Every structure is written in C-alpha cells, then in structure tokens.
Length: 389
Image 1: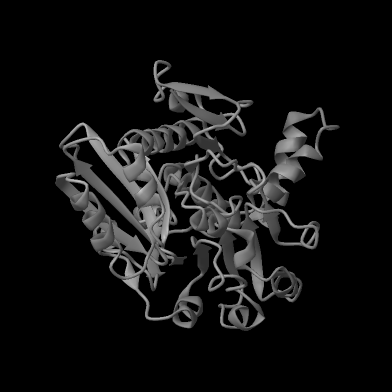
Image 2: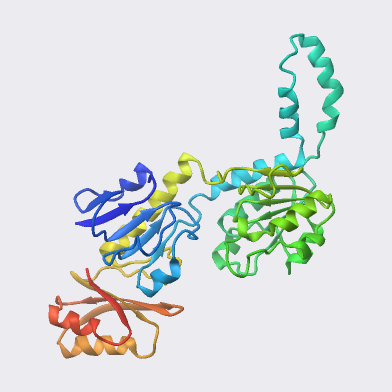
C-alpha cells in the first residue's frame, strides 16, 4: 500500500487514478511515499524521510525546493501542457482587452445606473462611445516570447485571428518546433522581436536567465504604444520599469496575471488574480497527468515529465526491478552490475540515464536480491537510494 499526502484540493478525476486497493490518499497521513500538491509552498521540513517523489498538479514548480529534492534523490514531477489551453484562452482575452476599450466601456456603463430613460441613454452612448474606440487585432503583429506548449497555441490562435506572428525561443525543442505553425516567423533575438511587435506576450519559466528579462533597457526597444502581456511569471518583468514605461506613455498597456502593489492604480495596468489555469478542465487535466506519472514511478520506477530527473521508461521484463539513484560519477553502472554479478544475480534488462549531477538506473533481474545484497548496493560510494519494485 502506497501512501500519498496531498496539499491543496486535488481534482477528484486525478485522485481516481490512484486505486484504493494500492493507494491511501489523505491530507493528513504519516510516513507518506509521495506528495501531491498544487500551489502549496513546500519546504524540506514537509518532506519526510519516507518521501520518494513529489508531483505538482501544474506546470510551475517554484513552490517546491527542487534543488534540495534532487540532493535527496527525489524526482519532482509536473504537468507541462495540461493547462495550456486554459492559459491560451485567457491570453487571447488579454489581447482583446489590450486592443479595445472594453474594461473602460464597462466601467462607464456602470455609471449610468441612475438613468431611467432608455432613449436618452442610447443617445448618450452614441455620443460617448468614441472614447472607447480601439483597434482590431487583424493585421497587427504579435511577438511571442517562448514557443512551448502555451506559446505555440497562442501563436496558432493569433494567426487564425489574422495577426502577423513572430516568435523567439532560444531553447525551442524539436517537439515544440513540429507543432509550431509554419507561418510564425522566428526571430534571431529579443530586440528584433520587441522592435517589430505591436503586442508582446511572454511564455517563459522563471529562471535566473529570465528574471527581469523585460527591464528598462528592453522596454526602450519596444514600439511606442505597444502592449505587453505576461501570463507566465511575475519575476520575468522589472515592475519599476513597467511602471515608468506606462506612466511615460511608451507602453500603452501591461496586462498580466500577477497583481503588484506598485502597479495598482497605474493607468494602463490591467491585472488578474492569477487565474490563467483556473478552469475545471485544466485542474482535471493536470491532476490526471501527474497522478499517472506518480503511479508509474512508484510502481515501475518509470519517469516522465520530471523537472530534475532524466526521462526514463523501461518495459517490465521480470518480477523484480531495482530502481537506483546515484550521483552522476564515472563507473557507477559498472560497480552496480559487478555487485549483482558477484551475487549470481542475472541482469535481464537495464536502462541508465543522467541529468546534471544525478543518474538513474532501472535494472530488471531474474531473482530478488537479499537484504544483505541491497545493503551492499546502498553502501556503494555515490549511491543515493535503492528501491526494489
């Protein structure tokens, strides 16, 4: 029986992937094998000695101490792309809010509550509506920074709306490149994209390399009157620079999913309360994806969509499997197989992959190793942990 501790409310459809015969799932549970969470700010004090894996029902893992988990040999799973459609739809709404006086018009209409003469109201609206006039998106240029699961969808939908789309992503994967529409023109660098775009939308993770990516220097390269959308991470932009650009009129609007005290009340700032992935469908998709990944890891040792471990899938070929995590140092695999050979344990199949400072091995063997042999494997220099599956 595997024990899973949950933080936050997890979609029922996700929890249904963990059958009751083999899993006990609860928000209060002792000695859990794994942790399943959404936005809860996890610390290593929450991660007991028994925890083998952590799964985040979402894409971002900035609420999880990933580096410390890696040192402990704990893979951290996420659900990239599971909420992509939800975020894409909100980005498209953001584009409309940035192009038309929609919010301003709604607020103006609310001020007419004291009027009871419909004809007089209609006449007034015909007179005043010109102040809310905007521009159509068709024919405008959208710059998409980050062409992953969300960015590529945004690009595709923008093309359908008649926009010209340019994109930049220095880390574009082969998979992402395949799903990217051919009509998206790839830019060689960010300054070129900023200089050409009427609208810029950000779809990047929060990394040291992306923090404050859009700062005062970058904003100077924007077209005057451009609109910036940020539904990725608040750390990607320099808030002080955004405020100055709005107040100076160089940036027409900043539309984001991340309210900031310094921007509230600033004309041109449109913020939403971090609702990009807040749909029933997105929450279901994320929970189902990570629950399946967690189950496959606990039962078979397979890894997919881990942010700190290599992807590794090995079909079961025998009743006993060893899942071994070690520091990524030379000759480790040879040491492991030598210990097994000395104990007359025949290896049927194995797979070894590394990622950064960590290496992971799945080894299918003919017979179950003894407790003494497992202790010998665990005692090897560089071994982080050994599991028998």
